[in-house]
Image (cartoon, rainbow, N blue to C red; front, side, top):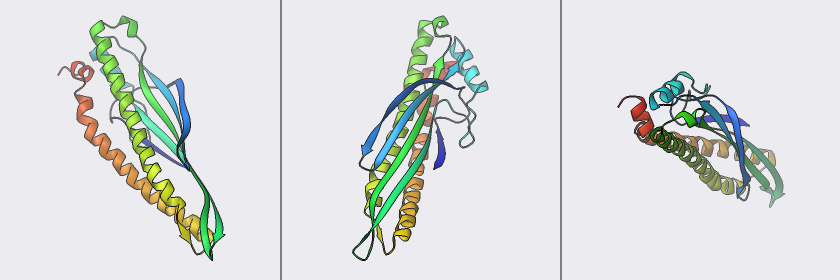
Length: 202
């Protein structure tokens, strides 16, 4: 089981409280996932005070630093093998991803002006899209490497288990590179949100 955290934007974010539990289910044969959504409260009634609060109350994260919103995930791998044609083949393989998506929640929304509410709604929609897009990238990776891992063979069954784990570790690392590339590419659009521009006086 590994723990990896992917953050929306370093240097900004908020605290944590449970919002609701999201869906659970299969993506492809052998690939399973669950998603839980959490919220972190954000205080402030103007773009300036909201952004200031997010800057001074970031989500502490040991992997990627603070963020506006983030997705954390753990995965488990279960492999059983069987002798086949003088060698060994995969009998059953299950790869399970457990995602936690953390999104900001305005605690003083009723005190905001209509224009600030509009900026906030745009900001939250972007945060949610970004984290769900990250989940899509992970699941697309899994939909590719899990079926490929199921087809692996080896002379011995103990050797096959090790081979499967090495292969998945390699593919997982490649997927993390895709995640980081996506985060870097999307960074400018975050800074260009109306809430961020107004909050930073741009």
